[in-house]
Each structure stands twice: as C-alpha cells, then as structure tokens.
Length: 420
Ligand SMILES: Cc1cc2nc3c(=O)[nH]c(=O)nc-3n(C[C@H](O)[C@H](O)[C@H](O)COP(=O)(O)OP(=O)(O)OC[C@H]3O[C@@H](n4cnc5c(N)ncnc54)[C@H](O)[C@@H]3O)c2cc1C
Image (tube, rainbow, N blue to C red; front, top):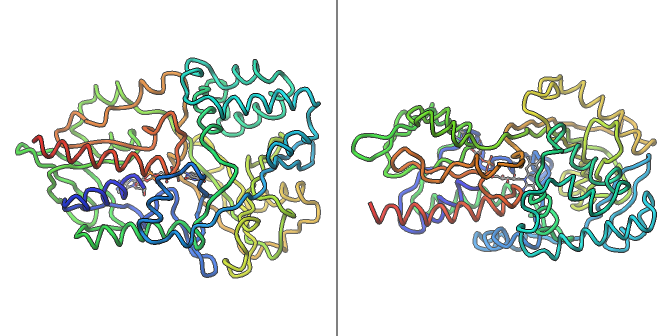
C-alpha cells in the first residue's frame, strides 16, 4: 500500500513511475487469493470508520459500492467459555471478572478513547500502566494474555503509546471490501498504468546504486538495471540494508529500525459454521497454539466463497520461531485439535480445504527507544528515500497509515525534485 499510494500520487503529479513488486500480485501483507469467486486475504483484514484515507481512496478508484460496514461480534475465550465483548453492555455483563473490575476496565477503555493523543502515555510500558489502572484481575484475564500472546517475551517492554493507538483509533463498526481488498490493490495498479506508470510484478529488487550524476540505478532479477531520478524504498529498514550496499554501515547501526515479528495463519475452509456468531475471538485462555480465531464468514456471507465457512487461526511470532518451519498438514491437524476445545462438536471432517500462510516483518515491536531506531526518510544515498510501516508510529501498522505515509512521501519526493 505504501509504495502504491506514493506511485499513484506521483503519477497524478505528472511523474513517470515504476513500481517493483517481488510477488506475482500487488497487495503486500494485505494480498488475497481466490476462494470461490472472491479474493480472501491471506491474513485477516478489515478497516475501521476512522480509516478515512482508505475510505477516500476506495471511493476514488470507484469501489465504494463494495465497501460494506457492520458490527461483527468480538469475543473472548477464557475458562473454556466464550464471552461477547459487544459494546458497553457486553463489557458490563462480562462473566469472567467481578463487577468492580469490569467497571475499572470500562473506565480504562473510556480514558483511552478520550485521550486525544499519545502524550500522556509516553515513557510508560503497557503492562505497568494497565496494571495500575485496572488492577491484578483485569491484568490476568485481559491485558497479560493480549500482550503476551502478541509479543511473547517482549510483552513487558511494549510501550503504552502503542496500546493507546490500538484502542483510541478503532471503531466498533468494521468495514470490508466485498470481494476482497485485492480489488483495491488491482485498481491502484490499473490507475497507475493508465497514468503512464509501469508495474513490474514478480520482480525482486536486488540492488539500489546511486550514480555520480545523481541518478539511481535499480537492479532487479527480471529487468536488469533501470535508471531513475529518485527512488522510494518501502521495505523494512533491515531489508533496505540488504539491497543498498552503498549505505554507510554507520547509518544502519545508528538506525537499525525496530525488530519485527512474523505472522503465521492457518485458514480452515469448513462445510459449516464453527461458532454461532463470533467474528473475532481473542484467545486469552492459556494453552492454545493460536492467539486469535477470526471467523470471516460470520461477517461476510459464505456464498461469496463458494459456500465455504472460513476461519483464520492467527499468530505473531519471532521470525525464527519453529512454527514457521513446520509441516503444514501437521500444523493444521494440531490446530484442529485446539479448535475442538472451542467447539467440542467440531470434527476434522468439516474441513474441506485448508491453507497456511507465513510472512516475515509483519509486526514492528514497539518497545522503549523505538523512535530512536527509525531512520530518517532522507537516506545518506542521494535521491534515495526510505519509508516503511514502522514509520507510522504512534499508530499500529495498518493499510490506512501506509496509504497516508505513501501520499506524504510522494509530496516529499516532488518537493525534493523541484529543489534539485
Ligand atoms: C496478520 C495481519 C493482520 C492485519 N490486519 C489488518 C487489518 O485488519 N486492517 C489493516 O488495515 N491492516 C492490517 N494489517 C496490516 C497491513 O497489512 C499492513 O499495514 C500493510 O499491508 C502494510 O503495507 P506496506 O506497503 O507498508 O508494507 P507491505 O505490505 O509489507 O509491502 C512491502 C512490499 O514489498 C515487497 N518486497 C519485499 N522485498 C522486495 C524486493 N526486494 N523487491 C521488490 N519488492 C519487494 C513485498 O512483497 C511487499 O509487497 C495486518 C497485517 C497482518 C500481518
């Protein structure tokens, strides 16, 4: 999204743009694949009412009639039971905490909603702040599982500003592009091409080399070397280091970028519903091999996917975690056994199809000192710029924020071009 939104704005400003994408399809972490007649994201995706840039661009490319909104149910698994967290009433009726704790939890969420920016939370870790605000019971049932599930042994260091953005920015109402977000990415590619831009798919950039005359050579595995006036790199900083051999080593030592976790999902295509009505299930109960269960077809109709009921089982893990190297069939069977604990009626014979997807650099780890690791957008290489999803702090990564950053970078490149 970051590269495409920058390319679109640059092309609209009259620049000749070329997009390099390693994969055979556009979309990056939000890429889809065909299930039935629709595209399904490899990793679960929706948008929020607050994702105004996404809504604006979906409209701009002519897809707003496909953008649907709903309030699919979010729930929590604890003590072998599922409790809905459906608006204030859901929190009030939440069965796993005494009333006094529920009220403290609601007050804490209200405070996060009302705080207009991240400033009051700077310098505090999420687990310390929530412990102080909501006490040990809410900590044990809600915050610890949430943060430990997502960040494992880094959970104690996650900063409160990250948690603030997660709750402050998000609406209860969720949006989805019926037929898949892939349509948006294809439409962006088409718009760029109509403006004279070129999109190279299945093309891995192998080196970026500034030249003495101020131009920049981009070498790729398919197109040899192409010469450009300016290059915007939208890779994680650690990958930028690998493709830009002329970057002085001191720069990457000073600005290594944050550590990232990878994402791992199993998708089950079932012949029937798994849960009655739950879209998003936070698996807070210890002992499960995944941290979230997302029953996509409790938001979208299964008819969009040839009648399959689709359930994601998701994890964020260190990129060297053994799960990434394990046999897919073995993982599906192990996760299936865990699913049976959530719905004892579940039988593996319900699985018509299954998929396993893995992605590195999927979640920046937002710990103290994070900002200090972020490189400036102007790299030491003349006319080479760097912007990636880690730069959207204090927001958590999301399509909306990559889109906005891409637009901002397009303006930055245009200004720099005029000045040069
Ligand atoms: C499990 C999961 C769930 C998510 N849920 C949501 C959600 O519900 N809503 C939401 O808005 N966002 C969600 N996101 C986040 C969203 O997917 C990202 O914020 C967004 O896609 C980031 O876009 P980007 O362009 O910044 O980065 P990326 O999508 O990572 O794009 C980087 C691109 O660079 C390409 N590339 C890498 N190396 C090379 C190379 N050498 N040469 C050429 N190309 C290369 C990659 O193939 C990729 O396409 C989720 C992400 C994950 C992992």
